[in-house]
Image (cartoon, rainbow, N blue to C red):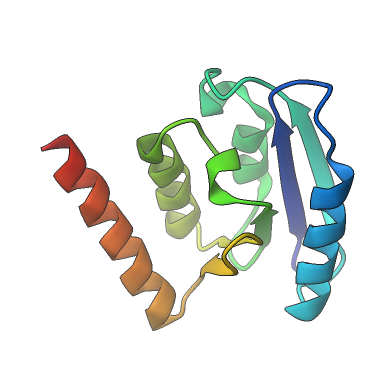
Length: 127
């Protein structure tokens, strides 16, 4: 059975997660992604992703499972860090969805092209 996990990260305990939860549930229902389990974390984006809950999520998810985020920027502080996470998800055949922008990374040709463009954009930024 496919798992669907929503990763919610805020930088401070004062930030509200309830709107993000509602948006994610609406998105999951609209895209027929099944029951959503939420993983919440209060952690600075400066903390490396391998030391945050996102690392555990990526470790436990299997091919065909789903990870939803409110927006891609919640994965990491830098574009490079986000791309590293998305690359790992791609290698493991984990589908990733971002509510903001209705963005997805799955096995579709469209998402593969978008992912390639993003990787090339990151590489051109650093070289």
